[in-house]
Length: 286
Image (tube, rainbow, N blue to C red):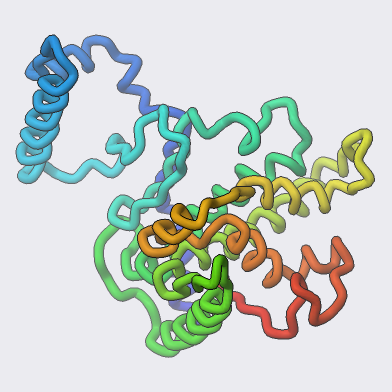
């Protein structure tokens, strides 16, 4: 990045609102009673569904003429096991339902947490600077804040990553590198950011004892924890639908793509040069 674009990026990064666990207003009974006073509770499920739809649509329409509230609007409810980034809010959301194994362990080793929840945090922050996210500023406004030359360099790096994921195949069906590009950028950038954070943490706090019973050091556990997030198996019909509809790459390729581009991983596991997880051509956006 050129100095001006980098300064703008740092400003946007500092303006990200982090929403962790749950919004405080859900513990406020007075607020909830007032908010839901026009939400009618019926006797059967379908009627309740219609009532809920009417209630939410009315609220959306009423909010059109009100100032946008970046702070108190949550995309995902606390029971959602999914993190998120919103470019128009410039916020990251980590609902309380995320904070359990294999994503997080309060009493677990730091290597496990940095590899899992740490890489997810990095993933969502990286979305602020992916193909779509980079078009918005720190207040969520659509604005071009990039130097043209830097923007062209960014586009060149995304072409490399698109082409890389285009070559992944399962059941003779290829991953769509264009469709999955933003999530692939976030996977790669998030893992790299989490690794930097983990190394800084070990430098400040000292390295923990390795897990007993495993012939693995903490750096290896970090990468295994990341990979476990995306362990999955598919029926052919399921993977076909996934490849057509989902913006993410299938789990095994989320792992292979991010790790094969990661020099630190290749050093930790001593991957031979030009092997599957240490190819000669590597792609890096962030």
